[in-house]
Length: 113
Image 1: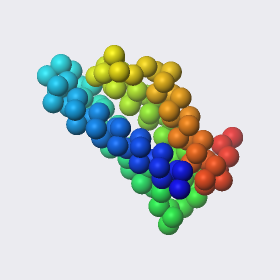
Image 2: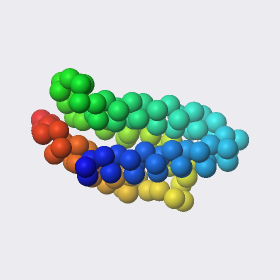
Image 3: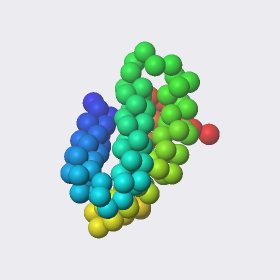
């Protein structure tokens, strides 16, 4: 239940931020906007797989222990910081990631090496 709440909250924040800023920043930095939208969509796909009870455990492990962190840190955070530098900080975004990933790991009983 907590995981779904956290997931819903993160998705709502992402979608709201994306919708608000897309029209404003599209003229400011179209490359960052495109990177953000692509990364946001990919992270949404990862969350859908993590929430899918039929998804293989090996795929959930790969997402939680490698792919989600890599995508978030390499693409999502830099793009979001370019688009909204006054609203977010890298340490704050990484802390949000840690909280979310820890909740998924606990809920799915996954331990990364």
